[in-house]
Image 1: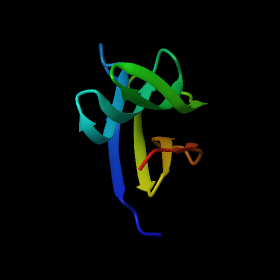
Image 2 (image 1 turned 90 degrees about the horizontal axis):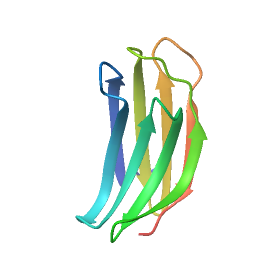
Image 3 (image 1 turned 135 degrees about the vertical axis):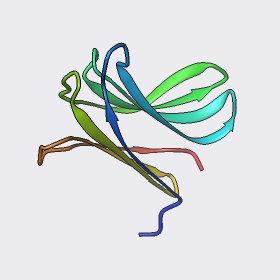
Length: 102
């Protein structure tokens, strides 16, 4: 599997920080994709923004806790984006997949 884009990060919701994001395939300020998680919504979403308009391509429910480490992983190959959300010290992960424009 050759990968066009790979991103991975370990995050923690602390204090006022309630979300984690990975932006990719940024064309300009008005055209980009974002992998987004938010503790208040308990959701991981893959969004595309074009000219300020949000289009959610895929979403999955996640379970988060304040001050808990978690890992976000994103792989893009061609027109397919796959993302995983894995809480620290847990075997379970949440996965989403969506088609994106090339």
